[in-house]
Image 1 (cartoon, helix red, strand yellow):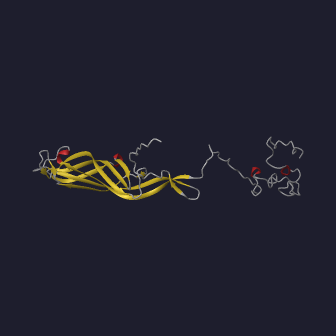
Image 2: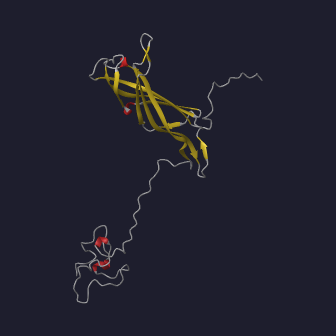
Image 3: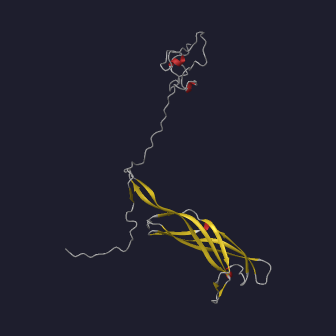
Length: 265
């Protein structure tokens, strides 16, 4: 046992993983007066670190009380206010928009002969190519846009029994104005992608021809779209829950400011 001394190689420059008593030198107040050797003087392989921490592979975890704390995150600059800026919801509504146009037979390729019988109309909208322009006026949201479509018409020309097809790639305009009481021009509109609710086609719609003659050689195409419009407004909230608008005059109508010439003193 002479090798188990204070100079024991098991001690590193960082200190021993076990206390002196764990190596058989004295008692450790952590573990009581347990001896490293039994009465039969045999060295127990489990007694080398009988009640030490996990470093010594003991089954007794209760003696390890490690509290690890991450360093506090330092802010780049201290905050000088306990108020926060949030978006207040002025309103949110599910709305429908209607895109439609009357398309003459001559707009298709090849041109549909006048007097043809329309067998079927297929309308394929391109939602990824939708163009929307949204404007807020006092108490209303105005939305105008275009939706690209590809229209395929199957028809029977006069006197023919063999169906033929004609196509047209164009854009259908849509517009909608939605009442939003309390909405102001400086508010923000959030609108998710449009969803198609229905597609309708009506052949035989009257159209004015090149000579000014009204004929039924046209097709009315209509697409009903659905979306949700949400109007938000930035406001300041203090620690007591008080709310104030970032711009208290956002709903005032901006006109040319008055100019006055005051009398000289």
